[in-house]
Length: 470
Image (tube, rainbow, N blue to C red; front, side, top):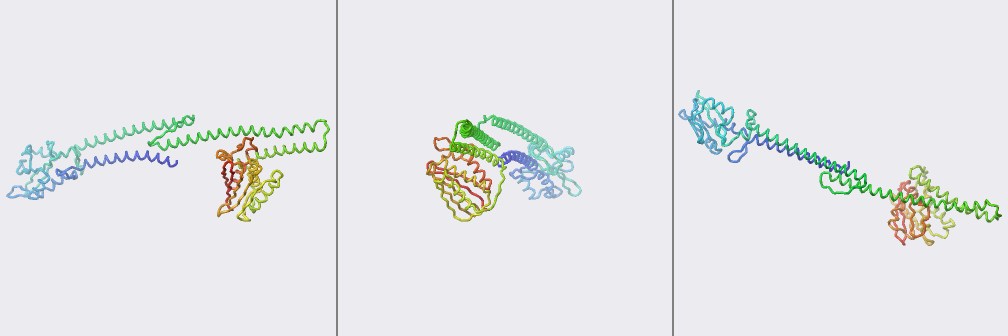
């Protein structure tokens, strides 16, 4: 999976992570709601603060003339927090009160105190009461604190002893969260199934070549971008395959014609030699020469076909030997110019060094460079000149082969090294088998090099070959 695939997976995990984070934050918020309360002054404290406050309040109760009173600090604590206080005698009667409400009772039965201590709240919906005891002498006094808030509806005690009204909130909230997660999962499942169905349809359309590229900015954006790229590559491949097939059919038709062309004089002169008409020795030699020339053409054509497919399949053995590349190329150009058909042509040779050692197969490299040079002569006019330049760098050997011929268009240079392609910048019938430059390219690449071409119509063509230094 590449970068785009990782991005899609990241989006999916991001959605999952955000959902999980939201659930965790909601649970934390719920938990904080259940274990905290707000004081009348807006301050948030732990839910066990009322019970702790009630327990600590006994330190503020004093007895004067056997009557309970509150210290000044205790009064300020009750006043600041708007908390009411009732102190009861052993019979349950109120003997001291501070900031009590109008509906506060002044007498409590033992059962009422037990219920109040157990539940932690009174019958009032606007306040919550806590019970404590303080001992003076041998007498136990009960005191009740009244907090101006309904703690049982919003909280639970941290010590775990009570969990009354908080149960409803917890179960309700957890149920809502589960429903939200379930609904979100179902919605996301339907969305994912819909997107996967669209992706499957897109893949099917691509196979049928009826896919229409589309833009998608959602989670599966990268997948759609990949599908768009895949469709483009497939269509390009189909077009290239069709062009190659058309080129191959045309090439087969041309090769068939090229084979028939030398066969016709061979057959004709063979029939002439076979009949009983008297012939001179000069005629026989001329007929035999024509037949031999056409047979050699056919043999070269067959060799090109054989070599092409052996190079493509990697079946050509390469016998590399280290020798002076400059001397080798110079001697090869001299051999070409010594041929009768090219004895009046010009090849300029220039090298920055006299000795450049390189390991190569002599026969194969001769074939490659001869194909390039002869191709320039064949497709140029009689005044076409070729310049071969050799230079070196730290890591490469560069060979430039330029001509001042008719040049080629950009479309022709793009297909120049393809098999079966026979380019021509004139209206004349293309010459050659269409395999020469493809063979040259394969041989150069077999030696670890590469070849490129640039051309300008009516100006000329330049081939650049780069080989790695040994």
